[in-house]
Length: 358
Ligand code: F6P
Image (cartoon, rainbow, N blue to C red):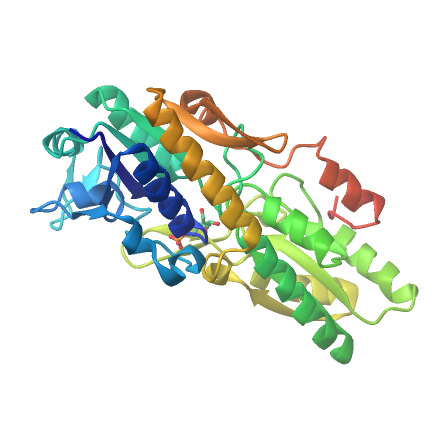
């Protein structure tokens, strides 16, 4: 009997997920392993019949390596331990999922996810005696013990291009352009895109700021003879009095959002510059993966299959010192990787005179 690997994508999508799956299928083919794709995270195992399909190399012909999103679908709002039923009742459905893995004869599964998904998947694995390997993906790049997650480079490229497009219009109209980017509680996208895109001010959740300090920086810019400026703000930055800026969606789910619009008029008032706000949003998640994300995705996919083939479970593949390695998934999910005060990029930004509003 061929060993059977399950694979699923979980949490918010990003560019490069299909590239991971393709490499898992290609590597498995060479090792004589079978791959079963599970749709919509673990939710596919709660459907009747199960929403699963065998993945073969021909499923990945042509454009799939280059395609954004995930051919298996995903969800970032379904927790099997507290699953919201259509009638609003919250039910623990974890046992059903564990049973489904066994029913399908899955020997080990690969979850492509971020830290939130990994916490759920490793709990399922532990309680259900399942063999699990994680592949880190998220535009937020906040998974611990790996310096890179699939999807981050593409998001960064999009955010940098947005600044490239905002700069000429800012200069033409003598304006300050504020770009709000994603990243949840970590400022990696804002920090990197801000440096790459020549921002004057970068605001990240890790560094408290004041609007007075931002205005002072903008006045310096004006005094030096420049008629425009660029600001990048990370979505989880709070208002100066510490209030979270959030959007409430239908059903009561909240997401970060609104800090750019909050800051725009206040910065205009204190700096004397006209301001405009762009919220980049989900544009950062879609589109074709960059070559770097495709390389990372495929290196991770191969490593994940090799771990399974060697019988190593409870591991997450990771990128450290230009190598693919594996780390304990339990260690990886202990905390989020935020921008720390010793960060080289933080030092670079400050050394270039970029203000963090502090
Ligand atoms: O974690 C990825 C991410 O894109 C965050 O940067 C953002 O805060 C969140 O997901 C948005 O979630 P949703 O897709 O549910 O709006």
